[in-house]
Image 1 (spheres, rainbow, N blue to C red):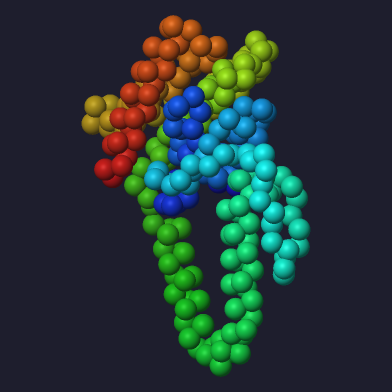
Image 2: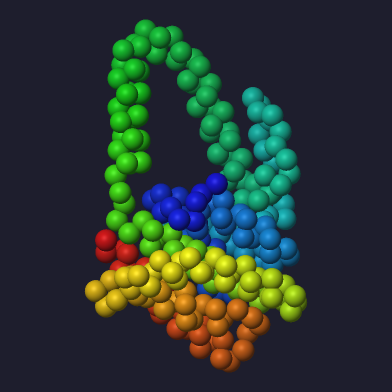
Length: 238
């Protein structure tokens, strides 16, 4: 599962569309957790991978059948969650690739030195990525968390949620925001615009959006979008 405090690897960002608004980025696991909790609302949501990927329904009413040759069957939920067809093609491609690798087993045994060198090179690159600090990785994680809470609010409004559900969600959200606010306030300033925008969003604006849609909350929604949008643009330049 993707950690909310870690940046999403390039190319693995997921977005979803609800009420003509695009939300994200989220990791695939976070997106699934979010939309699987939304009940029937998830049937109205379209998702895409990457900022320019094609849209497709999160849940498909008539998923395409999975290929059976060389594959064991998957649960229905796995085939329907991402629209069936694209997922089926992915598994078929994986199966074909696996068969090709097996057919070339003799080649790799004959070139063991090449395989060993390639493995060592991959291991060194992975170690480098793990050890080399990423610029503003913590702030990117905070931004992802705030965007997910914003998305949760939209889903609860569309449901619509009961007063008890809003209370439970508010308590959980305030618990999530508390350590973020404590960390950001240490250095949020005009010289650190990303941390400043995230700090204002987490402390002052996002808590005021928790609840059914009202005129006052609509204004807070717009302010939140401006602040988070500014933070996203600043992070995009780093």
